[in-house]
Length: 232
Image (tube, rainbow, N blue to C red; front, side, top):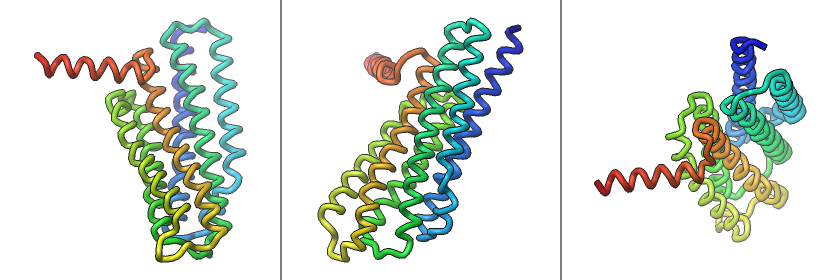
């Protein structure tokens, strides 16, 4: 296969990954809107997306394996193919988690809620959505500087995660809310934390793609360079 043709197929593969990411991002946006408005019908529209996302992910993985088999890629190409497979896995899993959350929202749309817990969940959902979208933008733009900042944003999700768990274990004075809703809220907390982690991992995969380094190693070298500059 001529190099030009091979590059075109690589570009199409990247476009497929980005398109899948946009679809999952759309599901995340609907999830957040459903949480904001208690719209069970909007949440229900996302039921079944997991099957579609898994099928798309399988197609991307198959195309990646075919490309590897048809031409012996150089190291940079191998990193790209590896990264597309890794990213696809993160995107598909995020889509599945989003469907799980939407199912919980659909089935508890009219339930009484603990206002403080609901506020923590909503802020967590917005932050997780933003991290996911930024991770995808980082991959599209190959912006490894932003990838290094993404972990700090995930720290906010971790704080909200702890706050939500505390409110689940110790209901606020405004009322505990419906028991079924609280049970679902406990699951939603874990799902949102994982979606944010997937977004961070997308950024980390981009660092590996661009530099060949794991993000932990790249961040350490980056910090060492900054300390060196400041010491001059």
